[in-house]
Image 1: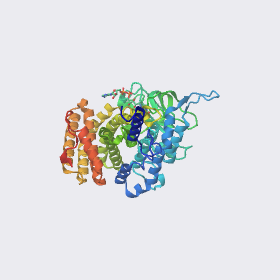
Image 2 (image 1 turned 120 degrees about the vertical axis):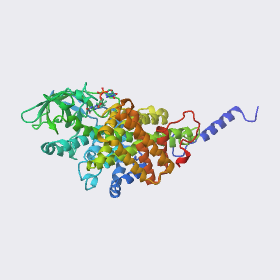
Image 3 (image 1 turned 90 degrees about the horizontal axis):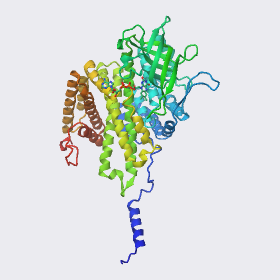
Image 4 (image 1 turned 30 degrees about the horizontal axis):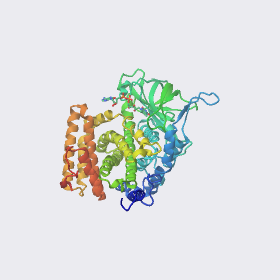
Length: 577
Ligand SMILES: Cc1cc2nc3c(=O)[nH]c(=O)nc-3n(C[C@H](O)[C@H](O)[C@H](O)COP(=O)(O)OP(=O)(O)OC[C@H]3O[C@@H](n4cnc5c(N)ncnc54)[C@H](O)[C@@H]3O)c2cc1C
C-alpha cells in the first residue's frame, strides 16, 4: 500500500478536476447573454453601416440604433418569449352578444407593436421626411438596419410591419389621388390611436404560387367601387385596417389578365364594419405571436388600385418589397443565432477549455458565420440598390430585380440551417423553449415558404435574367466593386472573377433554355459569388482581414469543388493571400 490512502486519492482527484474545470471568476456554468445590447456588441455592423450610409446620417442614427439594440437584447426579447407562448385569439362576439369580431393580442405583443410602430415608426420611415429627428427622407437602409436589430428579438410582428410599409408604397404608386388622400394619413400616422396597419390577401386554397387560378370575384358597382366575394386561405394580420386583395373581375378574361388589385378597408365610411369575416386563426409552427387567419369576403366594398387586369403586375411590387424584407429578417435571425453561439462558445468551459478554443468548434462557428455575413452584405447591397432604383436609375431596377429573389431564396434557406446548427452550440439548453434558439428555428422555417416558396423565387431569378436583362447589369456592377477594392489580394480577386464568370454562364444557359431543374443551383451560384465579392469589397474598404477571410470561405465552402477525403488543414489556397 502506498503512503496515500484511498480517501486522500479521491480528494486529490476531485481538487485536480476542480482546478481543470475552473471558470473565469465572473462566469456562470450556463452562460446567458440576456441584456446584451445587440447593436453595441456588434462592431462589424456598425462599421458596415458607416461604410454604406452618408456620414452625417450615420452619426445621427447612433443613439437610435443603440436604443434599438438595447431593447432587442432586453425588453423586446422578454416580450417576444411571452408573446410566443400566448398566441392571439379570435373573439367572435362581444359579451353582450353583438356579432363583432376581434383579435385579442397578448399585451406583450401590443407592447412590441408600440416600439415598432410608435417609437420607431418603422412602417413610415420610407414615406415620411420627419422621422427619428432627421429632416428629409432617409434611405431604405435605415429601416432595414433597425428591422435587422428588432427581428433579432421578434420575428412575427415584422410581417404586419412590412405589409403596412409595402401596402403604403403600393397605394402611393398605383392608387387614384383621391384614394391616397383619403387613406394615407391613417397609414402614416404615428399616433397610436389613429394609426392603421396593412395586410395582403392573395392566397386561396386553389391559388397559392399560381395566382392565375384566383377564384375570388369582384363585381363593379355603379358608384365606381367593387363588391368582393370569395375565400382567402392565408391572411396574416387579418384584422388590419387595410388589405390589398387580388380578385377576378366579373366579365374580364380568365387567368392572369382578368385579375385586378383592390384596396379593402375594414371600416366603411359610415363607421360600419366591411362585409368580411375571419373564419378562424391558423395554429402555426412559428410566428405564433402574430395572427394569421382565413377570411370569407361576402360582397365586401373595395376600391380598384391601378389598372384593371394588371393586378398581379402591381402587387408584384408589394411582394418584391416583402421578399426583400424577408431577406432582411432571415439575415437578422442568423445574426442572432451566430451571436448567441459565439457568446456561448466564449463563456462555456468543457474539458478545461473555452469551447471557442477547440479547433472543431472554431470550424463550426465559421460555418455559421459565413452564411450570416453573406446575407448581411446582400441586405446592405440590395437596400442601396432599391434606393437608386426608386430614384429612377434603370440599371439599378434591373439589378434590384435579380438581387431580391436571390436574397429571398438563399438567405431564407440558410437561416433554417444556421439557426438549427447554432442551437446545437448551446448544447441541451438550446432545445429548451426558455432560450431563444427553438423560437428562432421555428420562425426561420417560414421565410422560405411565404411570399414565394424557394422554387418560385429561384424561377424568378430566371425571369429577371430573361425579361429585365439583369445578368449583364449584375456583372458590370460586381466588376465595378472589384475595381474599387485594391485591398483584395490578387489571387483571390482572380478566383472571384472566374467564379462569377462560371456562375453567370450557368445561369444564362439555364434561363435561356428554360432548364428549370437548374434554377436553384443557378440562383445559389449567383448569390454566393455576389455576396463574396460584396464582402471582399467591404473588407477592403474597412481594412478588415477577418471579413476578407470570411469572403474567401464563401468561395471555398460554397462554390468551389472540394475533395471530401482531402486531409488539408487549411481551406484557403495559399496564393489567395
Ligand atoms: C404562416 C403563413 C402566413 C401567410 N400569410 C399570408 C398572407 O398574409 N397573405 C397571403 O396572400 N398569403 C399568405 N401565406 C401564403 C403563402 O404565401 C403561400 O402558402 C405560399 O405562397 C405557397 O402557396 P401554397 O401554399 O398554395 O403552395 P403551392 O403553391 O401549392 O406550392 C406547393 C409546392 O409546390 C411548389 N411549386 C409550385 N409551383 C411550382 C413550379 N412552377 N415549379 C416548381 N415547384 C412549384 C412550391 O415551391 C411548393 O413547394 C401565408 C402562409 C403561411 C404559412
